[in-house]
Image (cartoon, rainbow, N blue to C red; front, top):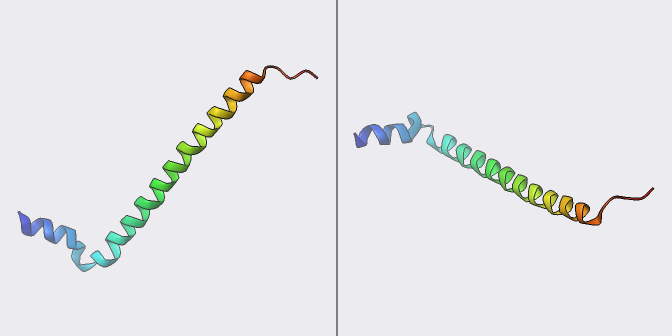
Length: 58
């Protein structure tokens, strides 16, 4: 059982290329998710401020 897991983790000898690629992808996707959450929160704050300001008279 353990030998099969180690063989899978070794990725047929290509692990030095595969695992760093997975790490880079995870970091990029995590950064994009964090930026999305940050922008969403900022937009909610701006929207609340605009609602408190009331209608704009022309």
